[in-house]
Image (cartoon, rainbow, N blue to C red):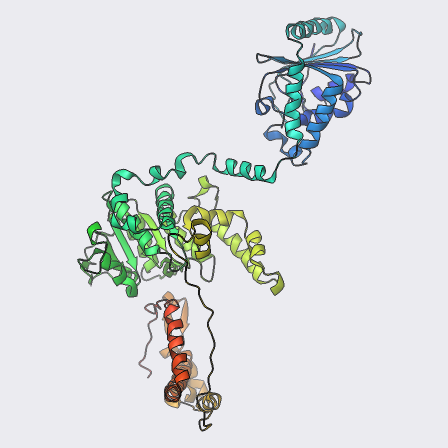
Length: 613
């Protein structure tokens, strides 16, 4: 007997090809049978006189009909259905097949012309698979032997004959195997492919979708007023957010305006308060009353019986070392003692600016609240978590991951920064396309899977159309339709006695306003000295706010203000002339009430020296 290394040119498949000449026979006993191994020997097997096969009683996966992980290159050829049909046809014509009730200890191949003693016998750890035949890399320590003389062939041939004769000659066994092949060969419905994809995506999720596992009933959350006030879609949002907070440490609720992000957040806050967790809510100053109301002894507080006990601070309080914010003394607050921090309008923290001489709000939030002290979960609320750059999202995600770029590596995101950077690059390329090519569907394809996986991991974002489609309108009613703005430009001067706004603007632009731009009159050789004297460093010296720019901006602002005042006066006068213009004003006020409030502008970081004026 000689040993077969099963690599290079010394493989089982090479030995078989030498013996599988036309009109020869093949006897096989194997614990596995792969269609891709059949494909490699198909031309030889078709010319056989006869073939006997013994297989164990296994299902398709254990038998290896569709191959293993090493057969990906073969599966990518998309020939599996065709191979199954070809194999079934070959078995019908050439093969006698018997099934063994027990697992076969090893494989045996006996190849050669019928009636001759010089048959080649191969035995050992070499099943009828691509690995077993040496087509793809297998176990390098497998022991495989090949006979070299008639005596050895006769002994092993007797062993196979005894095995064959011990098994029942059953047509049902062959038909059962053919049925397996035909099941693989038949055309599958597209829906089956879809269900199979869903199975592989969610098979490892287990009880993560179990509501009771996510939201423990023992906390009493379902008995609270705020929980009972929620619609079904809001409760689902709360459950999803709590699941992300528990598994990943953070979540961004990015539902569209008007879908109740505040009440979803209140339900989440109450859930953690019932677990005796301490909660901090960070809000823009203009929205402070929206949050303090629900913890106040106030008749307007319809959630008073829930007895909320969270702390409320303004975003700007993060820049202060002392003073009070409401009833909280900022000099003595224990920043690191919060189990949950809720950031309303979290997109205000999308820019991660740095100063050499002091901490920014972003830095203080990250260091003193999130990183220091107890483990802090972060819930962010924003209808626009991404504004101008996709990096806006990365800076908010950093609160969840504590700036750890590989924090989500176990969830398939090897680098958060690289994922966002690549998505930004693709977004820039999409913007550079011609207008007729800039379609949302193309952008989705270009951004790639990883970016959307990152969004799915940490965000909950539903639109009104989503709610209507998947939850219906029986509970919520139909959302009001958002009307497109109507541009109305009425004639303000019916008698034709007023000059046009364009002419007035041209007259204003002719004004020098010299008192507001004195540097225009400084001698050229003195310009640099005055520029150094009055210009202001900003952002720790990263750039300068030049005095000449300040003056020109002021002049422009004054011109605009004068024009606005004149326009307002003319409009006021005109509105008294006709009832139609009064209706227009009411319509404009209604449109203005429906638009989103202008984002709070923070100029605290810019130190303007007005001594020049």
